[in-house]
Length: 389
Image (tube, rainbow, N blue to C red; front, side):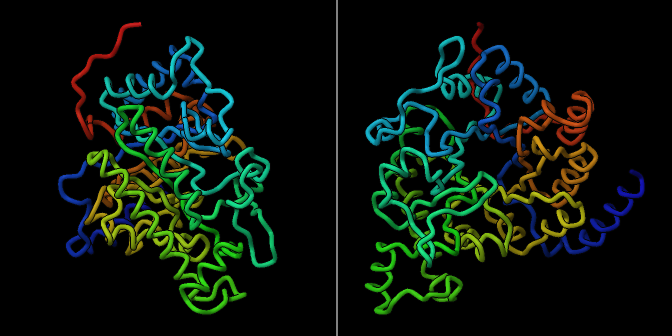
């Protein structure tokens, strides 16, 4: 433990010599102290006493941002006219005490000065056997050999065509529905607001490329011009989506949580540094999911992350473990320390493994986080009292 800390402090000291030329967090921004709430956390979210206890813990530990999932596996988890019209919302899961889960979470979070930014986890990704994919096969893109699925951490999934106007309208509509129905603080997408580099060989995209470029689509998915064309199309959609959000909700936070470079662009055509440069994002939370401390620390000094810090609220995603691969609190501790020393916020993936399912005692994990979040740091103060139940 001591040897690890000495090594980490030595590395950070060396980098600290460059702080005079490396600006840190953008002015007038508050460091993100966030956590993602996944589908695995639904049992907590749908039971009011457990929800209140979880939020009390997060308030006591001085968190300031929640990212609850609302779009996953081809389904939305809130009442959606768009989803009903497409036949992909036969019912809406409610709390055991018969409450709207996102509505209750937002109210309970706000009275504790926690922001709520709904997370559209799946982006353009859908299970191939989902009702949405089966009802709209024309919405799906494909690979050069006609393949329609890709193996991911979420299993074998299909990808909706980001360039198809009906797909873009669908995603835009469910985003606006969340903002219209709930007093949430913004919306977040992640590395699935993208297109795997192998995809884009569907008939619609081939025709669009030929119309604009006056030539056929290259058979090599990594052809530089073909990659840039698709990446720019994604950027254009992000720009349009942000405009639609800001037209109705100018104060809504438009957040993206991409993976690190070069993977983001080389594998998913997600040119998020360009999104930062164009002023399309209000915050970026870069997923730095590494089981090795040295690799994690190295990623924090990517030029793109350092530049983002000077423009918008910038944080890194810290992996607290998966059900099949727990992360000891010593490693979480070292990662948070490294991020904060470089002026970066942090968001934990995910609440389930933060202390609920973990290899260390609950109190030990909570006290370790509290050591780093010793003082409250609200991003916004809400003038409302918590309701009595």
